[in-house]
Length: 175
Image 1 (cartoon, rainbow, N blue to C red):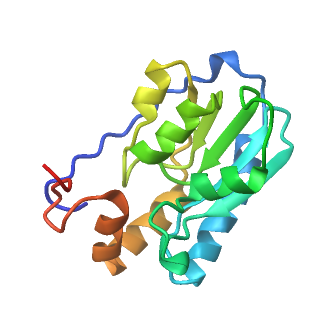
Image 2: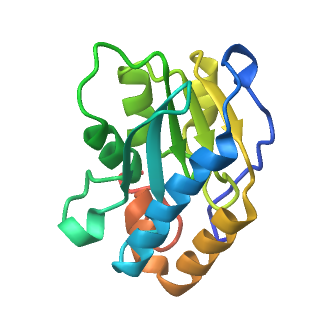
């Protein structure tokens, strides 16, 4: 973990209001996307959007490096690939890493009802805020997701800091 960044481990499960689904199988789709991103030289974060019944609507990966697009986070990519719907209340966003504030805003804006997070050890984004606003949160503490991010952060710290919006000292830009 980089100096100046504090990360909490949150093992709470806020999923008491959502029908049962196979979060492990859903995470496997997101993890596959993260591995594709890594193989393309990008940030290894993957996501997928499902219905609460487990139907895959869209999948994607962080493509900021590959596309030169600072807004193409994994959750954004999965959301775009899912296409339009009348509403998103009955959907589950699955992501390999705790969603950043940008992606947390997407979840709130479109009323996605549940977020499954592979890990929040290497980065703790807006999942507490989402829970405070009624979004069900499940954090899996997946060892493969943790290992993948730790290896990436060690190998590419500058790219990691760019992705999460901090400088090399751990200070958020603009502060």
